[in-house]
Image (tube, rainbow over all chains, first blue to last red; front, side):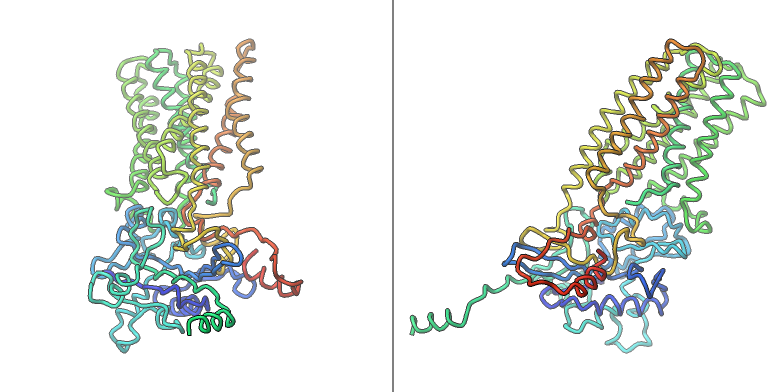
Length: 220
Length: 335
């Protein structure tokens, strides 16, 4: 089993509700806090899920894309074997990559090894923290079934994020990846990320109302 | 990435300790050891090894977990580094203890074999430390064999430079250490040249097409995701050095690591005492500090594709923009 999140880049509007709900849930949950040094002055705190905004192309053919970036829970997670104490580990039963704060020495080698820069160093506790795929929620049997999913997935207003088992070919996430050419980031680095993104569809070229009318007249 | 003082002290201290031990082993095999010479070498090696050891301890941020450090010997080079560097330090201490308590024949075969054994473990520790950096594919600048060669050769070069000073202080003949130092200097610059070239290639390897999956270039990063330089919680990345700053530090490295020591050696050939060699060795140490700072600070991590803000380019189509709004948005983007 490999739990994962698939993000449809056509639906993501960059509202950052996943980013905020992640921070809210985890700070008050079992794996928090996700600290800020100067919470009311400086936005440069710890976020396990960050929305990166990128623009591509040349004016006027440009497009903006929002990329929610959290731990990719890689199949071959490079952060796991480099950890000297075994604090970073990948669960065999569901593929989630986690950090045991008790045995983390804060050497930050896993942060260098992670190709995506999604691990964050907590200066207060001296340990590295990261997205847990809300493991405390998804394994909490006291929660209703519908709520047993990561906070970022549940809070997405456009339903851009889908949670499921990538190793199950009948799951919704597997079907989305297979049918819509889901891709992982930085494949050349060989980490085999479990988190996938559904690519942007080509933007339709702008056609004016006059052009449509002219075409209709010509045809009919 | 962010170069921390502990990392600089750890790698430089370890390199110098190993270099000095190898120099001691070389002198032992030449049969020129005297008690004062051995003690100055052992003292200097133990001191630099202790500097590295203390720095490695304070490089950790959660001391209570240190007892688990050898758990992942099978896969983690950092775990192996703790083992091999610990072994080297322990053997060096044993060598000093043996020299002090048993007063062995310093130029005898047994003493030479033991010193070479310690030097071998030192070289092994240096190799393992270098592999720690060289085996991280995400650290694009370091993922190369030149990283290993760089650590080994610079350690030996630094050790040889200080060995000449210690020899001069104990009034011993130079035993060809100057020639060895010059040969190592040539190797240092060949490897450094190669490594700086690899660093340049690594900067060009940052690829938004595979980092974002966007179909067409050019790319502009508009928001790094509620963070801003120097990315306080993400020590693996930092905004790149500007070219002028990089070149000036590379020139300074060349000056301190190569030019000043060579001039000091040339003047030292016609002078009595160890003054010039001391200047040369001090210059090499400063050069090592600069080199190691550049090694960490100028390294390119693959995640830099998500962190490097594009420079602000004024819009070609927007009307005069409300300055208050521009200020606010610039602030929120961390620019």
